[in-house]
Image (cartoon, rainbow, N blue to C red; front, top):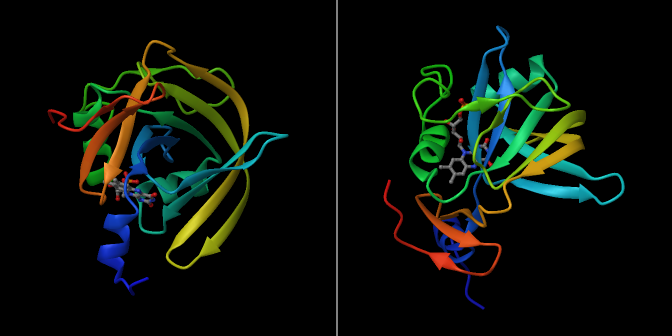
Length: 176
Ligand SMILES: Cc1cc2nc3c(=O)[nH]c(=O)nc-3n(C[C@H](O)[C@H](O)[C@H](O)COP(=O)(O)O)c2cc1C
């Protein structure tokens, strides 16, 4: 084993999943952020945690409204998904400035995103401060998806997106 610095270790540990968290701001305007730091935390009940930087607009949104939808963007959505991970909702309206279409969720107020592979509707039940991020722990209240969209996105070194299918197929050179 060799000692690695942070850059090296994050490169070596790639790819990471790349998902989108849809939240609501104080004016009830939906916002979307790109997110790799998420996990299932419980099977029964099904629960999910996401780790959100304290400076993110999404953090402000989650402090205001304790629900989110965790969407897995499908192949073909990489351009807009990347915008959501590189631009803040403080500066742009991500549903207006991308092709993403908001569709009503079933059990929570933030909308879901049309065409994603899967969408978990979540209600926050707890929060844990951890360094410069806050972990929001949530109950999954319903799940929906598009079974034909098997290919969804992963990030390499947090700098490039690739697509990996639930069938094991991989596409490296996405056009975005
Ligand atoms: C590949 C990738 C993964 C990311 N993962 C996270 C994450 O897990 N947590 C986080 O707080 N920010 C993450 N970000 C950064 C946010 O998506 C980014 O700061 C975004 O602009 C925040 O938007 P907001 O200010 O509208 O909330 C990630 C960005 C990229 C490109």
